[in-house]
Length: 258
Image (cartoon, rainbow, N blue to C red; front, side, top):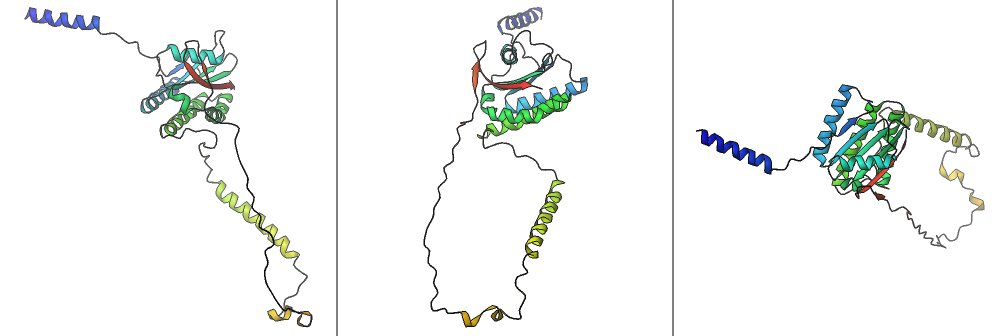
């Protein structure tokens, strides 16, 4: 019995020595600037983990107080490269020192998040950061990432000429209908008020000045045929601009101040 236990212990020790131990990647939410409450942090992290696993691409949010002398782009790229994240993904960096933010994309993330797409995303979540509502901003960012990755997996990344459809509030429907009806009524009333040159008659023949009509022949002749061709083009080919990080990894990205 002792020999058997010793043999098992030896096998376990051998496996422990020979099997490499891989370091776990950093969490997908790192709030060093302490912008979120504990409950907000827990809920957001769970959401980022769920979306990342389902989309097979890491969605990461990092907040810091200082960039340690780096540019926002350099800091975001280096953080993504050195913390063991998926080769496909996107990282949102928020620095409170100079109120900078940067989105760094990698792998399939470069395809999913085009320059035009990231510009659209910024318009949606940056205003919330400006107001100081970071939980709302980060949750909006997560939702957009989920939607953009889904569309890219379906072969249609959001880009110029193909963006998410804006949702119209329900209250605008009756309001727009009422405005349209009012404008139409004003225009029709104005036209009707000017129609006073002819008085109504009992039948159609009364409008014809028979003695002065001399009609021998009637025909329609089309003198010209006009065809207009309009050529349209775009100088912007869309897609994502890229650069190489200090680690030698290709990244896309976009950012600004809030």
